[in-house]
Image 1: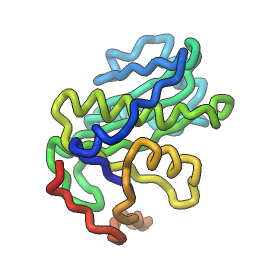
Image 2: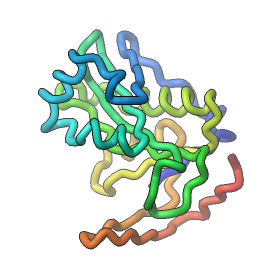
Image 3: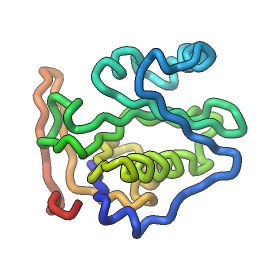
Image 4: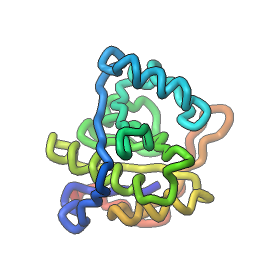
Length: 176
């Protein structure tokens, strides 16, 4: 698990890619029919039930490169996360279920999306972000660290629903 506080965002360069645009949606009703069709078509790659995540307070972030659907990801504020590895304040956000579609991998879109999400939500009052990532997913870890997130530990999600936290660095959750 990685974290980034609002006080650390000034140390990070904005990642921008020509032709790459990101938009976000607060509710299923806001998602245009054409995007719904794209998400349905890419369900195998995207791998989440969009309507259910909206019901749990998720914000959907969609990235397009030259107009084509390229990335997707979710954020949820701390007040919309019932159970997680550590207690979350309402102004803390979890970034999760991010995906770059196969034909767009290796172009740096994931760090650009993370940069955009954090800067957008920090400007709206967010104070801290957390990103979880599988330890084998080295490309994602590199993208997360490129944006300025630092590793604080890892969590284990047991099949019975139990969450176990393994801290590897002092989280210093006061530096927001």
